Image 1 (cartoon, rainbow, N blue to C red):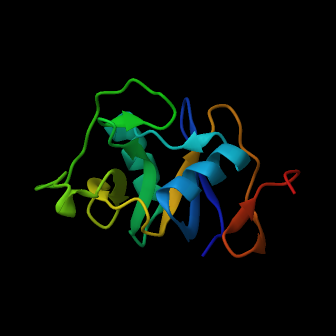
Image 2 (cartoon, helix red, strand yellow):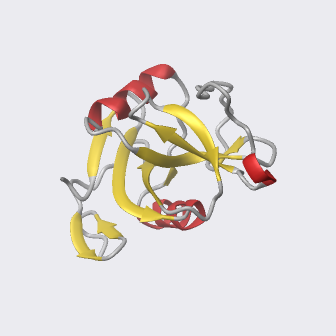
Length: 143
């Protein structure tokens, strides 16, 4: 299982970080080591990520409720909610994860849950990550 994986799109590179962090910590990690949490702006981008995750899994990406907006400020109206979602169960589900065991369909979750996550960085990619410690996955030159 790779520590970091990447998907190169025509305009964006996705980096999969399997280490579980809360949504806010994942956002901080992506902003520090890459660019930001990924914005999934269309089905093609969703499918590119799906292609990297043969085992499925639920991953944070950059959508949150305030009302719904993207972490990186993207202006995309694309959505791919799982049936019955978003449901804001217990009125504390303000962050969004994609379930890649179900085609990457979106679900709202409490932001403090620890999940793997997807970063992106248009026009930049640092190569496969190296393991430096729990919750850390860096590209070459970013130690």
